Image (cartoon, rainbow, N blue to C red):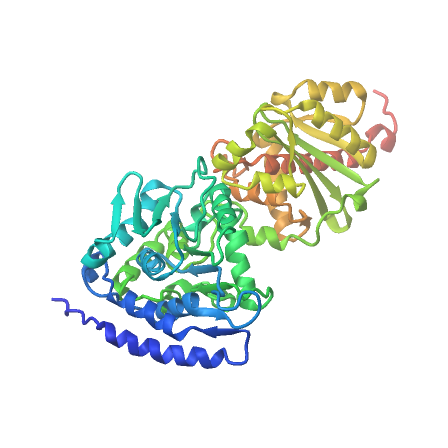
Length: 561
């Protein structure tokens, strides 16, 4: 029989908080900031009287972890001492980054309750956004269940299920909390005062987040809080704009006093040990609630699965140890790909240089990729990429492919042709310009997906357009060559984010002789750039073999029969 858990009373947490408040106030002496001690204690006393909403803790006053107490005090009570913002809250953006099962949703509901009932701003608008409707409802349910357990608080609010909304009227003003899904439709005009972003790693589009953060600009003391676990999408806005930014703030690379980051993850030294995931000290380091949730028995069960399945191992590292991973079937790991980056590609440095191209023509509504490889000494290559997409389809592609096409277009990594189909004349002109700029020897294209574009280029004699098969015979050798060059750090791709994303999507198809090629049908997302790269290397390899062929008649002379 399991021993009954002992729960701490609320006054225990008051004493812990008082000690931290004194310590924090002392730390902030002689700085531009101070701790509003009265407000800090008010937040803690209020929060400690609220009750948990599920499991063995249901109905018990909130059982804080130390990091939760500290965070509430820091976020809500740290203020400007001087200047134009004197007396206002310091922190505007917050990241709580930790593995699953560590109470993120319960804590998010608690934060919303503090803001809803303690913050003095009138006409507050609080929102929680998530990718799916069911996920969005979780924090709403936690918040509502917490206040339902306090009759005095519950008597002050009204709640609806559709939409999931909680309101509180004070004189002529209405405060509200609402959970929203990732669709940005009809969300313009919102003026959030407090925003939580749930599981940012799973957000496929930045649209809703952008609308909500734009709305925060209308508030004097806006606050956005991200609560997330690691994931697989390193091209999403959360990884780039929130997680990576938070790490740089923690490391002192970026100075941003308004950003508050709590990161529970293995450090670089931990990850050098291939068996780090088996070690209990790592579990404890990254799971602040270990022993409560997740339990040790739960973690041990996950270890047993991870030892027998690569897919389970990747999931365990990602979801329970908070390590960003590639998916189990990734061909070339993102880390290995990045190690092959030596410098960014500047087209001016490539003018007049020999190169070979691979053109992966899409359907009229999809992405078209053109990749050039520029041979260097020691069998190294520089890679230059061009990508095109119809402009009218871009937003739909952002939603479907879960990557920032709009940002890539702005940064010059992808071009958009007018309309809802690819304008091949635009691509034709670019290839002609490239052939004048570079010494383009040959361009390989898929013989089964040619178009008038290829015919026009051939007729104009711009470059040798070479049909290139997509079967094992043609594609296996250059596919293996990509892998070899990356591992030898001889393929400088310039860090192009579109190609990096496409490489992470590649799934391979193999034959009985262990030939393999990129399989578009099985790849998780777009791989057009990877296919174009393989064709460019393939046509270069063929050209190299042709150069080595020697006319036997020139070497030995004619023989008479």
